[in-house]
Image (cartoon, one colour):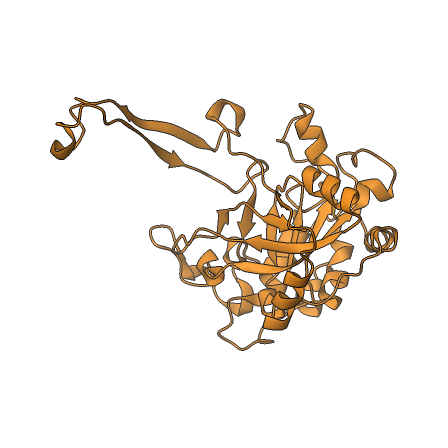
Length: 305
């Protein structure tokens, strides 16, 4: 497993100063091809709603800052004469990494032996100013490509995979065959394990035991030149099956491959739409907030069929 760091490395592949990693597979032609997958004009979100604090994990906060009506002392003087004016405002503090919020991981999110993607030292990440290397702003122009949903839960004829169930390359190819689609260079691959259905039906979102990508999928993703992977879990099957590395998919993807990750997607509506239309490819648009020096961003991935 540790050998994947060398075997699947993309360091220097697109130059020593490259911060985009596998997003380089998304060429202008790939984007044009993605646009041609839009046949019905139907768009669906692949994100969870960010709800009030009591319904979110402990690390996430959403606090009302103001809800003022005319005459409130905090209102600017120019508004005091308008007795019909009112407003609401919020201060949001979000720890988006974790098991709940749909978010994008940029390569600076994970280190291995003190090193980030393309051989940069972790010392480039400063607690006060953030990361000077491979932050989410590297994808500031957005990620627009062909998305492919692989419904492995359906392949296994199950509403969802059980926590701890790994997804293997043969599952991916079985999904391709069942759905009549093939993953190719520049694609974003979204993996449905059915965890979204569990959450919709009232299941817990936390914990460290979950279904997800098994590390053996990494060579498959590298060979297919996948640009981005997502899942309805935080990606890695847990336990990973490897004593020497807790989250091998995160570590090898972000550090060695420069493969960006979409964690905690809600793929239920996307899967139902794909099934109804008989179309498992679509245009996927992901627009991260341009947080300077930050290791990712909450996002609302949009699939357009």
